[in-house]
Image 1 (cartoon, rainbow, N blue to C red):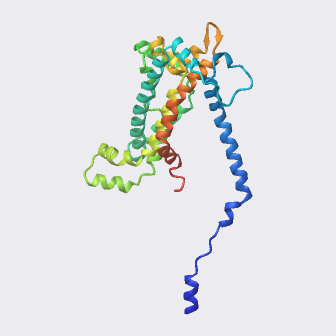
Image 2 (tube, rainbow, N blue to C red):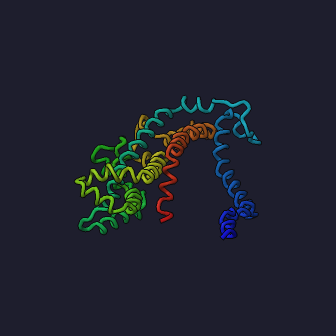
Image 3 (cartoon, one colour):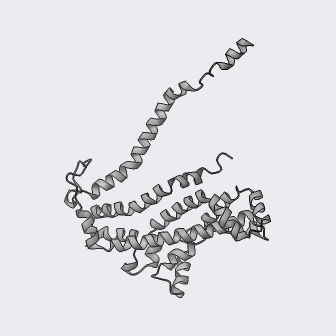
Amino acid sequence: MAAEARLARRPAPVRGSRSRFRPSMIVIYAVLILAAIAFVLPFYWMVVSALRPTADFYKIPIPLVPDPPSLENFQALFDRSMFGRGIVNTVFLAVMSVILQVWFCALAGYTFAKLRFAGRERLFVAVLATMMIPLGVGMIPNFIIMARIGWVDTFLPLIVPGIANAFGVFWMRQYCLSLPDELLDAARVDGTGEFGIFWRIVLPIIRPALASLAIFVFLSTWNDFLQPLVFLRSQENFTVQLWLSFVSRVNNVGQPAIVMAGSVLASIPIVIMFVALQRHFIAGLTAGSTK
């Protein structure tokens, strides 16, 4: 008995301590570092080029740090265009698209996942089938419809048609399927209505999926070029991407340094959006991976 007691008091051997120094881990970290450099280098080159004087843009070698840094390109950007107005327009479009698409896609996803009604599966398949239609195929009919109802040169064609897009509905439905039916049934027994269940129970649980969808919608709206090009006419309504295309050539002369300055400014809201929702975004992407 005494021997068994001494054995029981012995600390358990630490397993896997040698795994920290495996040569394969060195190779993996080296590959990850090289991949990180490959992804960061274009953005770093963009910032450096934006801070270099316009006359020095084509000089080789490219300095690691501009000496001295210049704001000439940023000043030229705002002097030659209404780029600030374009940022305001794009922020408005992105925010409205995020709010409306996240809300309606969450409603539709919860409906397809947890409510029972006739033709539910067929309707969901029909919604998914719209994902196979390229955007360019429906551009002309969509433009004709928007022109007849007087929405051309407004922000409505860029917001309303995509309120409940197929990808968002599919994304939210797949996440809502993981919700336990017992939790929803208990709320129904307590007398909570379906909208109350969605607002008080479902939305707080699916916040990671909402954040992930919000980032997707924000990125797609912010970087969209084709639809604003088709539907917007007046320069007061131009978005960031249209102004970048506009200032890329002034008097038929390429202006890459000015474009770099505009690209730096256009990247800032995207970085802020991702950093603010990074925790929820990662949780939304990895949800269900351990189930």
